[in-house]
Length: 135
Image (cartoon, rainbow, N blue to C red):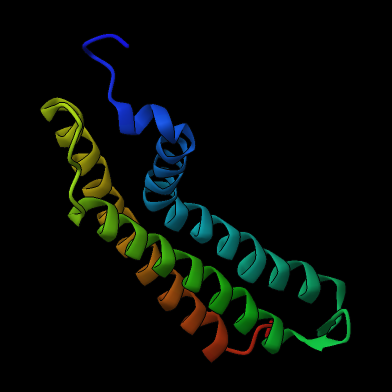
């Protein structure tokens, strides 16, 4: 074993990979959820209304829009919680520069996920409040 290796990291290599996955979910999860919301809630309304229908797969358009808002909002809030957890946990055993980089990236995720959650909720509120197929 070399002097620079860390025995705990070598014993469980999947943990480092999983932590990286959590970090990137915390950074990009809210933005991806917002894109999903934008495509489904707004794009689907435009397509369905343009075709002259008021239902999607047997569900009313209003119910589809609420579902297309609640699920991405839950994903964005989960990403926000993950970013908060990543930025606030103890990162023992890492070099200081790596710890700083992880915390900085997680804090960027906090801002991105918070903004995405607000956009999703306000956008969903607008779509749910107004009649979708009014011309």
